[in-house]
Length: 144
Image (cartoon, rainbow, N blue to C red; front, side, top):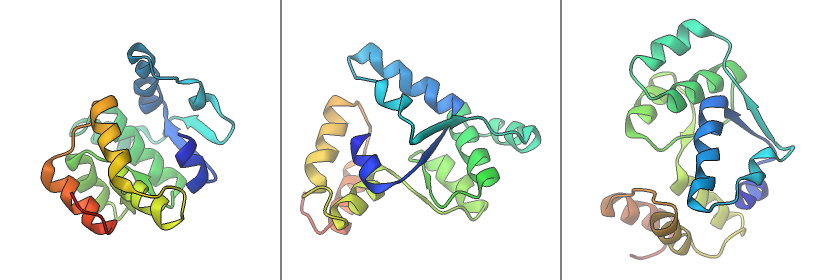
């Protein structure tokens, strides 16, 4: 999350995603960062769109998209394929963890994307196909 702080001045996290993030403490991951003042936790208020989204997405993705729409967010960070398709249908600007890391490298916050992706995959249990890994690394100007 320290990496995110160096890239974004504020992050809005929906309540459902916040609850998912707090579960990381069960895996020995420090979660106190999620209480930082630059991280805002809130829930979308438009229940009609939220309920429609919950019919096709998990709670976290549904709330993230609904909140992004309400806040007219500059960028939505979302990795699930189905969620990205729905975000695209709403013309939301979005990126995934790979895009965040590419941005961090471009800003000089990190030196290489590959190390972070490998760590996220091994320590964080984040699934990323070899094809996606290769695509991200190519976009970052790195090799597999």
